Amino acid sequence: MKDKPWYIANPNKDPDGVHYTGNLPHDEGQEVHTFDDVPINASGPGSHLFSGYLDNTDVFRKMVTALKLDASK
Image 1 (tube, rainbow, N blue to C red):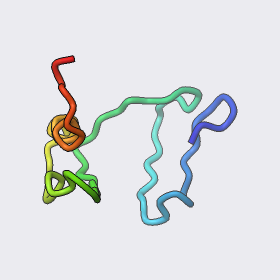
Image 2: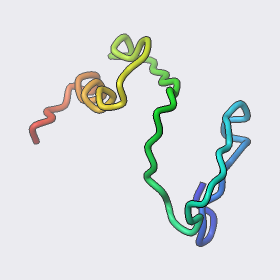
Image 3: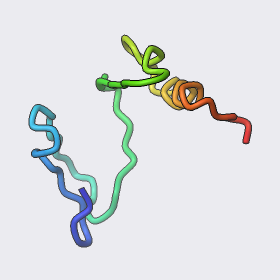
Image 4: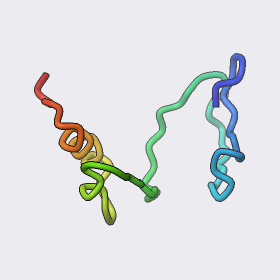
């Protein structure tokens, strides 16, 4: 959650989430990748594409397919 000049975790958004602490600066957003599996939920048209475990690189492609977009543009 963006709050003033720093980012803080919001446990109310996901009370069952796991909060990791570390030595990354907290004054800007971080794009850190981990090998942790995370749940992806979908509903509506195209939601059948998001079942089981997905490689994180497949999520974008499946979103493009579900939204009937042209990924080449």
